[in-house]
Image (cartoon, rainbow over all chains, first blue to last red; front, side, top):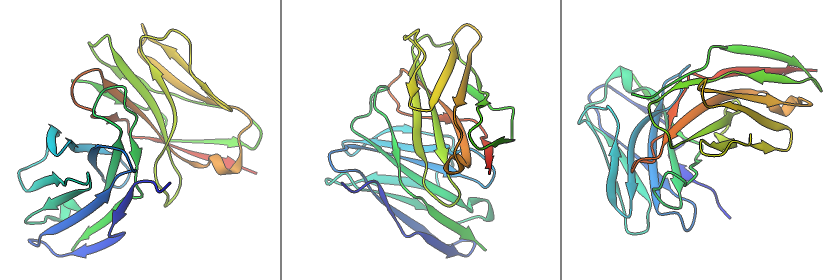
Length: 114
Length: 115
């Protein structure tokens, strides 16, 4: 079975641009979470979606938004990119959104903002 | 707010030896979950082991085991018979028992297994 997949693998943008990152969860998983991992740090929670509804949001500005589609895949959008948005963006999927549901991570999208 | 602290930025161990990675956390919750994730160089993060706070028995997965001390809010990872493939960044993570599946990560420990 395929694991969590993310696209693109790498991305280079300039300040002020917009970016869309995509994630496909493990088959059968209905929840997707997004994390930002800045170099040298642990991942920081951005969003969680379950059954197409937002279930949680981290401490990120409104420039960050996300959505989940009927097939449970998800997009993360970032507007007005800043240099500080350069990071590895991780998607994690889980069967449900409960505390007992283990999250499985994708390989990430490496975003570089110039 | 919950926090997770990993006080060892880097560690090194000889192949076949045993190493222990430290993690402490702070929470006022009684129901929560703790995890160790492994992130090899340029590869994706994978779950190593998980521990439910309501379980007194320490979790074990093959060569990996934890020492969970709830009162001390400590959650260390022991790797026995270290292998070269264990070289990776190890993250300790916390999740409370609430409605959000949010993981709170520590800053990680870079483990190098030497031949």
